[in-house]
Structure formats: C-alpha cells, structure tokens
Length: 426
DNA sequence: TCTGGGGTCCTAGGACCC
DNA sequence: TCTGGGGTCCTAGGACCC
Image 1 (cartoon, rainbow, N blue to C red):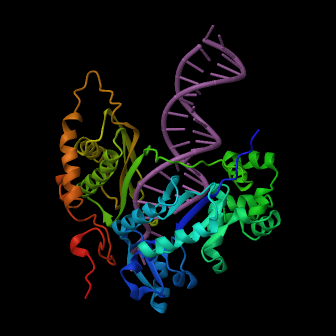
Image 2 (cartoon, rainbow, N blue to C red):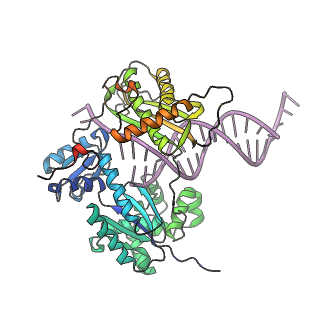
Image 3 (cartoon, rainbow, N blue to C red):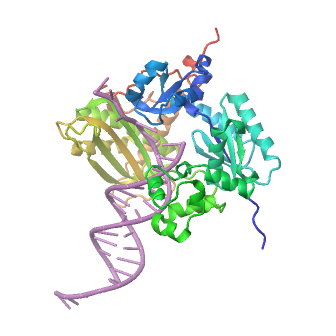
C-alpha cells in the first residue's frame, strides 16, 4: 500500500485586515493606534498592532474603549465593507496564481494547497511579497499537514516576529513539534472556544500538546465528535478537506441592530423591506429559491430593566421563490402578527432557508405560481442595482421613516468602488 | 446613552411510526 | 386496550468561526 504524501496546506491570513485596508488610503495612520468598528459603531472588530498593545480587546463595545481611546489618541473608523470586499477579491485572485487548489475561507483568509511543490519557504515569501506589492495588504503564511495545524502555524507566524511572517510546521522535528505545542494554550486551537477551553482544563488539557496526546476514548466520550476531529487534525490526520467549489448557502440571513429603538410597525416594515432585498439578492446570486421564511424581532437584551420580547415566526413558501416582492409580502404579514405595542425594538431580521437550486422548481399543483412572473423583473432590478449602486431600485416601503437608521459616523469613503469617492492625487 | 452580522455543525429531546 | 423498544424525522439551542 502506498502511503499518502504529507499535505502541505498553507493558510494565508491578512494582518489586521480591516485596519490594513483603511491604512492604504490613509498613509498617515501608519504606526498609530487604529480600530475599525462594527455596524452602528458598536464593537471593535479590527485592531492595529498599536491598538492591541494598548489593551483594546477584539469584540469589545466601543463605549468601553472610549476613555482609553481619548487618552491615547486611538482613531476609530466605521466599517466600510464595500472597500474590504473589493480588496479581499484582489488578494484572493493573486493567491490563485500560486496554486490551482485554493479555498477562500473568509474575507481575509485563504487555504492554499502547496502539496508537492518544492521550496515552500521561497514560495511563502513570494506570496507575501506579491500581495504586499500589488495590494498593500500584509499577510502571514502558515503551513501544516492539516487545516488545523496550518491555522496554528499561521498563529505562530503572526506571533513571533522572528518568523518574518512565515512558519512551516511540516519542517519541524518531532521534538520541535512537542516543544512548540507545549508552549501554546489550547484555546488557540481552531474550534476550541470560550466554553470548551475551561471544560478541557478540568480534564488536565491545558496546552495544544495535551489535546493532541489526550486519551482518545475519554475525549470522545466527554466532548463528542467535534473535539475528536480536532484532535486527529492535531495528530496530522486530515479530517477537514479542501472545499474547491463553494457550496451554495443553506440559509441566508439579513438583520441589523437599529441606531435607536424602534416602536412603530411601519418602521419595522421599512427595515424589513431592506432585509428582504439584501437576502434575496444573495439568494438570486447563487441561483436558488427559498421555501421557508422566518422573521424575528428583538428588544434590547442588554437592558433587562426594559420589557423584553423576542418573537420569531416562520412561514413555508408554498412555491419556493427568489422574488423580493413575494417574500416581502409575507414578511410584512409576519410583522403584523408579531408586533406588539409598548416595546422598543432594537434589532430585527429575516432568515431564508430550505434553499434549493432554482432549476429544481416544483410548482404547487393547485396554487397559482406567483413567483415566476417576477423573475424577469428581479433580474432587471439586480442589473440596474449592479450598475447604479444598491438601492437605486427598491421596494417602496423601505422609504417609510428613518426611525431605524444605522449609526455610522466614522466611515471612510468607498475609495475603490464608487467613482465619486476615488482618492484624488493633489 | 452607547454592546455586529452571517454562517456551520452537532446534540438532545419530542413526535411519530412500526 | 394493554405493553415495549427502536428507528426516523424535525426542531431548538448551543458552540464555534470570522
């Protein structure tokens, strides 16, 4: 029997991605503490190294950081997803030149299969060099025999300046691997989060090495298949394969927190029309239909002193559809059912599920199909909005009231995607 | 005063059927 | 009507990721 050659999986991860994107167009921000905030300027979602050193935590609410920010002149920017998505595409396209087998894992990460290629160190540095030169975004490269170990190698590349942004786990001896894994706490492992780490600690599993070498049946019995998979990946047995083609989404969600609590049903419907549109654009982009619609409303759960209400309701769509108009009619109906006076709603959203390819249409025998007549209209809407910007054509109820608007006071221009916001060379 | 959004996978428990 | 066990399907909720 032939043994399989060791996989050489590289995880390429952009450093402080959103902050790095912002700095491209604001060179004056280099070397200064900068953070990027989530929607509504709510939480910190990206930090420059300087901000990390000052103690700003990932996911921390901005209002908690404000005092520290004033003291140290930390600059906070609202998130600008159009900019980040555009730069992400450029980075991913460059990576595709290095291997035919790439998997875009998130907006700022990509697995690149380098199995069988010679001189991995040289290739890794070439990747860094090319991406910084063509996009200005710094990246780190971690190589391992499994995805989990590639992620861990990337963590090492980021953490240790001596690695110069590249770390190859496969190049280590058994003893070096042991020493490395013993020096890293188990919570750094991909898939071990907030809850799992303390539970593992109760079993004496504190380091990555502890997890790798833990008693298999006990681990399996106490923590289930999820942790067992992680363990095998750490033992260099690949359990998570490369996904060469992105599978279509099984559920599509669209939701937002509101800048201020919303009280009126009309405002909720206006927000809902936008959520429906956003979700349906994604649905149509992956050429699918949805057969289930769920609508939810939420009051502010951070305010237990206020009356709480978190209703959810679903409707099956008799004829699976991708029509914004059809789905919006149902969403409006659901709001009429869910809405109660006397509550300040802080968040709302929809979820589309039971998603199937739009080629597998099964029409209802008895009901008149309402969606097919919309499909031409929808494709025109998508084309117009693609050309003139999202929202050029929209469902009219979106315009009812601005009560639900989002706070974004610190947003940078759409430097790369809107002509009028291109940076000018003075 | 101010606390993101969009996903996936797994498990437990209930309903139902044979 | 009584009894039991086992399989399947569905849903809700938890945990994790970025």
